[in-house]
Amino acid sequence: MIGAALLCAHTAFKTGCGYEGLISHQNAIIPLATILPEAIYIGDHPKKIPVKTKAVAIGPGLGKSENSKKLLELAFKFKGHIVVDADGLNLIAGHSDLLHQLPKGSILTPHLGELKRLIGAANRPEELLEKQKAFSKKHGVLIIQKGPYSKLTAPSGKLYINSTGERWNGDSWNGRRPYRNYWLVFSARLLTIGSCHKRHVLSWTCWR
Image (cartoon, one colour):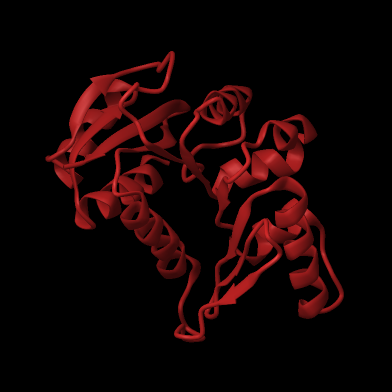
């Protein structure tokens, strides 16, 4: 699903990242050149995260294979800001060892279904929100529950609700806002990781 990774990289470019590199299988070259010609194709099979990277976003299009899990573990060794979405969240939900590796201060951006897989279901929305707050506090992470009224919980136990959404706002729209906002906050180099034809895609973007 290279489209998901390219969507992240394209959003980063649109919000000010002026230099982007992509590590991917060669099958990604043509879609990349078509959709995001500003990006640089770097190669295949990343052994490590580029040293200039200041932030990492991983999950969209990643898949849930063993290779995907290894790539997520690589991302968790990164010492800067990290955003986890989509299959990154599903992998954490399915592997307790990944949860223990999750760096403090990570930003998780689940939609409702991903959130329930991650922290467990609840009988009422209020109960689910309390579980979200407890999870953030226990693991030291920020969670943005995407939806018409996105809910952000912090390790401090604080809750923030975005009241400007609309009921027809889908996951694609709401899912892009957390990335956009945090890219702007970081004002730094960004690494996004996805997959293509069962090969991994790693997009490295720099803030000029």
